[in-house]
Amino acid sequence: MSSILIIGTGGVGAVVAKKCYKDNTFNQICLANRSLNKALAIKKSIGDNNIQCEQVDADNAQEVITLIKKHKPQLVINTALPYQDLSIMDACLECKVDYLDTANYEPKDVAKFEYHWQWAYQQRFKDAGIMALLGSGFDPGVTNVFIAYARKHYFDTIYKIDIMDCNGGDHGQVFATNFNPEINIREITQKGRYWKNGHWIETPPLSEHHSFDFPEVGKREMYLMYHEEMESLTKHFPEIKEMRFYMTFSQEYLTHLRVLQNLGLTSIKPINYKGLNIIPLEFLKALLPEPSSLGATTVGKTCIGCIIEGIKDNKPKKIYIYNICDHQKCFTELGSQAISYTTGVPAMIGAKLILQKIWHQSGVLNMEQLDPDPFMEELNKNGLPWIVKEL
Image (cartoon, rainbow, N blue to C red; front, side, top):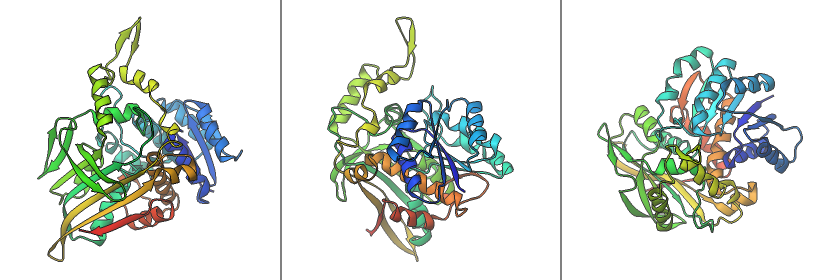
């Protein structure tokens, strides 16, 4: 019997739960969330009374420990907020249970996401004989595996990578984010950063941009950002000389964001309002549409992939490896928009490979450290087919 505990039942958690339910690798599923009603809603949409639902404060490691001891899962899948990564990892260590997440830790009071907090758990997870798989989403996640796959099958060495994330979808809202607004806005309002010749180079937020003609989407303006997979990829592939990450945004989105910033509504510093300390970004999140509610109205496609340059057989080589995902097809299958789908499906695949012991070794690992082939096969089987183009 393969038993899992999914902590966090937002848009991504819902996709993970539904995909796991469809795959016979997963025999027992428990859904846990701060709001029990969200977990119960997913259970109702799946329609199986055997799915367990629990309420938990994932910031509290002891509550998570109690939950793990009650349900005895073989794997904890963390689709909660990145602030909660360490408390859930602490609980997994205490209970000697494997761990998986989709995004790296960041402190709540500083918009700074880095892997060093989680990499510091390496020896403790090794000593406990359990595995922590970090970043099993799309970017990070699939993009890491794309690069590992390219390195294994297409290159003798890689020296340049551009990771490009394009959401060509339209949700019909004046302003909304396609995943957690708090995490999304914290991410895109910090300084850009890229890797060149062994050093990180910083740029003002969203200051560097250019257009790219994305397959099945068309020309979009993409903006240079920092993204966490670059940190692990430059560590595990030290041959890389240059790496950048880009994400597309419409002018309308950026105009709204600029106004919100000018008003102070994207700040994470508490302000006093009528005797209460409130964080403006958390207040803004409460005003914006819930990302999981956007599936019914979102049309269009995403295109996420990597342009990789390097050497094969002493000759220069360049490939583009990418996935196209259709928002409406995702909604038809799971009631989700493509952003949640492209994050949730890789989490399910990573969990499956861990439980099947295809991907399993003690310690804290990033996606590119494991054999990419079985993961790539599962992407094709589970709704995220990929394409390789020689450039």
